[in-house]
Image 1 (tube, one colour):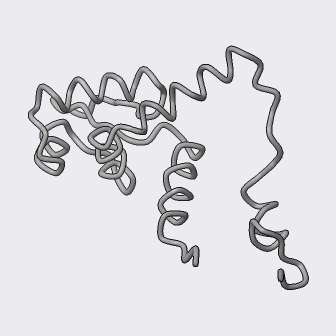
Image 2 (tube, rainbow, N blue to C red; image 1 turned 90 degrees about the vertical axis):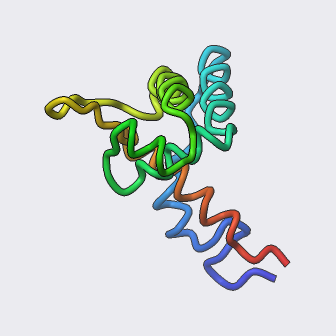
Length: 120
């Protein structure tokens, strides 16, 4: 049984803080959303996003941290940029990658917390 002020999703305040209602996506929006989740569904690409969660990283840092070749890292980074999950910026001779915005940060953080919840 849920406690007062609670529902299946948590407290009303918790739900209000993270969920502002679902916009009408339309067919094109649904296809785009599905593509984003498909892109994040690859473990290698998700690892790159997790590496960029705290700070921007270069290709060589990402390649070393994930154990991917630089070629595969670059390929995955291109897909993540095209999906607007990561953005890149040039700093000196290096290109740094970081999460695109707070929406992407929330999706990754919320799902990470979700997988660690006790569901018994």
